[in-house]
Image 1 (cartoon, rainbow, N blue to C red):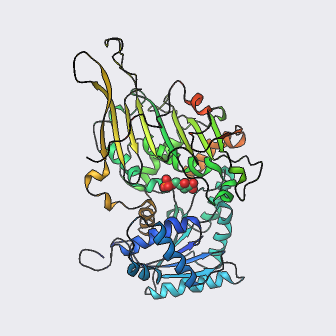
Image 2: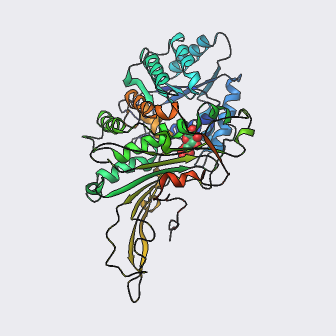
Image 3: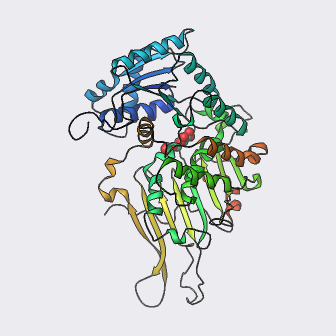
Length: 487
Ligand code: BG6
């Protein structure tokens, strides 16, 4: 509802029927159904109905129960049963296992369109693994559900350059690019967008945001969780395709891009794609692949699986701003901590004026750190004088936590923000065909000739080779100093 108490009438906010493919899957239960629930209760979202579909043989009642349970289990906010009942009443389900499933899907969707007054827009959400995308696209054509619709595609978008091109051709034969929303939920995270605000709304850091002042950059996303039932999906994907070619490279683009001419989809896409075009093809000798001990025993995993559950790599952007500044990226499952940080290490000054033993430079260079947690934080570390006689130096920091603004409750979860943008036709935070294809192109040397996978202990920081990869520098994580808590 808007301030006058009526539903949002902004352009792009017409009623929507969301057709959710993969409606019983892990992502749907953890994020999409709770996210749609929150949007449906908010005053931001237009009227909507949801038609869930998947290979599971459920009926609408069972799907509503599944959604009810998922929202209770995974919603990040308080859930009132009354609101939840209102939400689940908007859900219907069609199984794809029946031979007449295209007609059944078409009938269910049209029924919901009629329920919304007859001119609702369709938003197809393809929350399905890469190999299921083509059959779903065919089903959309068979069911005649392409007109007046937009489509959100989950990552990874293809598994290499050839499959991404094939997928782009298949999708472009049905939808023009304007109606395709390739999702990368890291770009929907509030702190990711804050990188743009921080860089381009302030005069302080942008002048030093280049190779003359920055030594190196780390984008580090260790995860504690293991595969917990997703091993079968992971077997055909692995950490590089699941996390790096998607999320970490997209974040890298926000960190590295030139100022866009405006905060609009084309201008931002142009600058991101320029970063991708300047990326050097990955060098497999600068990549560490790892697999946690015990992964091969998980259901659905081959006993001699070569799939990586961990990857760390060095990547380079060969342009005027970044030539010679290495970007170190790391992510993996079953690691010691769950974190999402970007760490900018500044060049060190000459230190000869300080007496021996002063401590200058001993805790690494000055760092600017972004914590991409849902409630984001930022820190700038620097050397300062320890109070008292003489000149001893300590590493100190200026820190900011989004909670301090008192508006942390207004944060939309990444999927919520992005689904809402898709309903409004806003592609600013979505990726494009060119960008995705270029990323597969720079990844080709690694995919063609991957280094051997090395095993690592659960609760570690990955295989030992990660230290050689970054030497003589060091990984920021685990942090030497913890974030300050609230006073
Ligand atoms: C998903 C990956 O896209 O992102 C998962 O498929 C990963 O493997 C997840 O765990 C991490 O996202 P978030 O938002 O929990 O950091």
